[in-house]
Length: 144
Image (cartoon, rainbow, N blue to C red; front, side, top):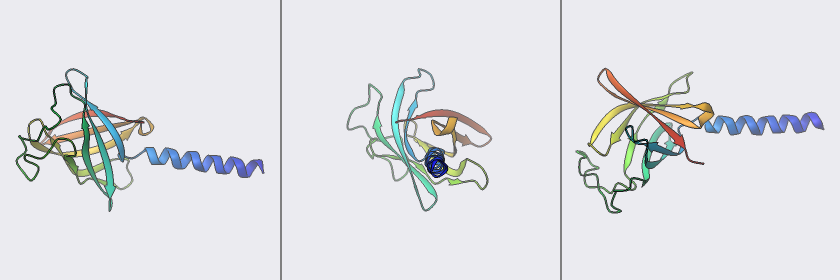
């Protein structure tokens, strides 16, 4: 009986930990310079590919009806709330990294190649944007 209970608890704990080692979920990013929270982004996975939308802006100066005026594609003029900023990205075989996707910076309208790596047991997400040989990494925090 004790062995069965221990096995069940171990399985539940392992499944819970594995579920957190993914970019899927709600994340909060911060301004690189000030450290202030900028937005909450919800990442989902459909057919193995990631997509992510700004659920809400946390910047003090953002108007509720703000749009992506800098975007140059189908997102131009779309509301910031609900804006899809992550498109694509699939889990690399044998690694805990999702690559091959794109991420949009709505502040400048530029889209970058991106990779997403859960760290610290899935509590944080390293988001790396690439432009040619250059890259920048942000660490996002999972929202409980």
